[in-house]
Image 1: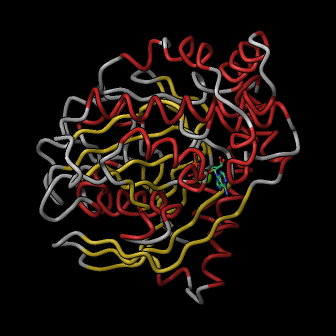
Image 2 (image 1 turned 180 degrees about the vertical axis):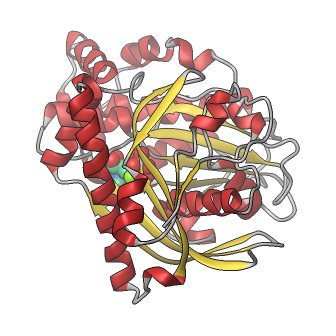
Amino acid sequence: MTSCLAVGVMSGTSLDGVSTALVRLSDDPLEAQLVAFRQEPYAAPERGQIVDAIARGGSKDLALLHVALGERFAGAILQLLAETKTTPKDLAFVASHGQTIWHEPGRATLQLGDPAVIAERVGVRVVSDFRSRDVAAGGQGAPLVPLADVMLFGHPERGRLLLNIGGIANVTWVPRRGIAAGALAFDTGPGVAVIDAVTRRLDPDAPFDRDGARARRGKPRSKVLDALLADAYFSQPPPKSTGREHFGIEFAARLIGLVQQAGGSDNDAVATATALTAETIARALERWTPLPNGPEIELVISGGGARNPVLVELLAARVRPRPVLPFDRLFFDGEAKEALAFALLGFLTICGKPGNLPAATGARGPRVLGHITPA
Ligand SMILES: Nc1ncnc2c1ncn2[C@@H]1O[C@H](COP(=O)(O)OP(=O)(O)O)[C@@H](O)[C@H]1O
Ligand SMILES: [Mg+2]
């Protein structure tokens, strides 16, 4: 296959909704061009249903959610096709990441959203379940975006750091665009997951700390920050990945409890969660990425967390003199990056090529990822 059109579907750990990207892909040289992008937020009850299924769902809940999410993704894809006047027969495939229900690094990772439902409703073959093969090969199953970072978003002449701040934050060090040797990637810890969970616990109607408004009015509690920074995940060397299982509701409850004990306000709790995210990213870069501390190495940020100005300011102050650059300024809407990356991974699978970066996941070797459901 030399050139084709595909849809990538991503629904990240922040549980904010479903992102779909229409992508033009080509081989030799490998290229992926964003044609259109859409985001559909989960309604609050929908998000609640997923959170409940994750926390205490029985087999019936999970089976029903698998089908319901398949319908949800299919609906989002059809909407994208309608808006872009694209017909299913123009598509070579759909690549669907699925909604992560459980991620236990190196042991098991499960994404729901039945590909059979998507194939049936959209009428296009579906590549799905990208992570399990990497886990079977001894890897973490995550992060999987690094290969896209290396192939598409690295600097053409020098090193570059790419940081995606979704629910979980992950960083990729690319020595040079297209060069996988020497590349390194891992999850630094929470992206917006803890900020979101703290905000929602304090105000159940707020999906997240919009524009960092609460963090701006609060003050991080340094003793609490120190206690949280002692979490073993942060000192663990890569390859490593994490999820809501570790940095979710319970972690947020602990943070709020500690801030309250210290006499802090609700906004102080959000400020502390925001400072924790910035600090853990900065420390991870200092400790694990092999880069000269020169101003020529830029940190390119994407994901919804890049829309939180307080988080970005804290991070920029911490990594100075290294410049922090929004992904949008170099490429396209940073929130579309992961959906596009999965379209690229689907393309590699269809072409019979590996999609994991063993240095990032710890897998025994490169593997062709995913399952293919025929149209
Ligand atoms: N205007 C904003 N202000 C603050 N945070 C924002 C804003 N827009 C998006 N976000 C954050 O981005 C998150 C979604 O990011 P996303 O990259 O989609 O994560 P994921 O891939 O895990 O779903 C939201 O939960 C929220 O925390
Ligand atoms: Mg999202």
